[in-house]
Image 1: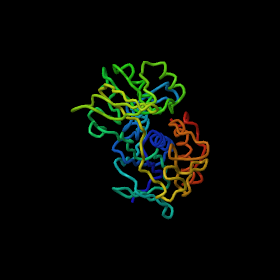
Image 2: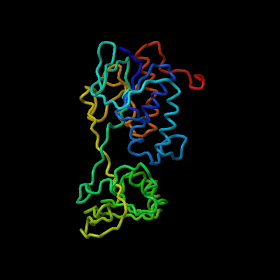
Image 3: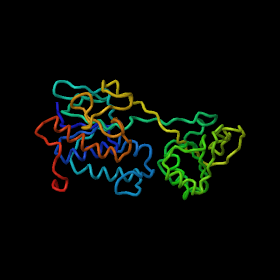
Image 4: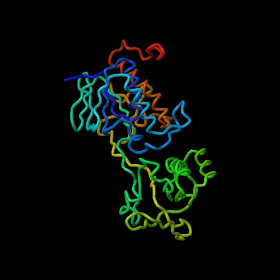
Length: 323
C-alpha cells in the first residue's frame, strides 16, 4: 500500500490552495474529490459568476479563478483521485484510512476542505416549473451569453440572485428580480448597486405559475400582501433559492454539527491527524469566505506536518525563500 503525507479531501478553491501549499512544504500529497474536475462549486455551479472576496482582484470570474489556482497547483506533482466520493474516514494506528466508492487510501494526515458537500438546487415547486426545467427554467449558469438579448427573470433575494441580476443587466434585453420580501439578504453594496441599476425589482412577489408551450414564455406572479396576480412575459427564468447538501460529517465521528466540523485554532479536529479548513471548518466568530479558507489552508498544512513529525516547524520559511 502507498502512504501519503497529506491527503486533501475536497478540490474546491481552498482544497486546491492547500494542495499547492503542501507542495511548497515538500509533502507527498493526494487530492480526492467527488466531482470529475477541480474547482468544486465554482466550476460546477457558478463558472460564469464574478467573485469579489479574492485579495488582489476587484472581481474575477469563478472559472478564471479556478484556472489560476490549477496552474498554481500544477507546480508540484500531486496525485489526483477525482470522481471518488469519500464514504468513511478513520484513524487506524498511525495512519488515517480513507474509504471511497472506488478505493481505500492511506495517509499520515488528512485535511478536509469539503466546503459544504455535494449540492442539489432548491427547486421551484409551482405549477409548470418541472415541465420547463432545461427548457427555460435554469438552476445553473454555464454560459452567460445564452441570455443575450433575452427577457430574463431571476427568483431569489440573496447575494447570488443580485449578483446574477447585475451581471445580466448589460447582456439581457430586460431583467426582472422577483423576491417574496421587500428587503434583500445580500451585501449592502450589492443592494445599492441593484437599486441604481435598470433591473426591474418585483417585490414582494412570489411565482404562482410557469407557462409556455415547448419553452417557457411567461410567469404568473402573486403579490404577497394583496394577493393580486400579474402576468410577466419572459424568455428565461433563473432560480436562485440556494442549494441543499447531502453532507453529514457526523457519520465520520468528528465533533461538530451535521455540516460543520469543529476545529481548534490549529485547524485540528477531534480526531488526531485530521484537520479541516474552508467552509466545513467551524469555530466561534468564523466568517465563511473563500479568503478565510485561503488563510486557514496553510495553518492546516503546517500543523498536519508538525503532527506527522514534531521536528517540522509550524512556522516555515517565507515563501520568497522557497523558490
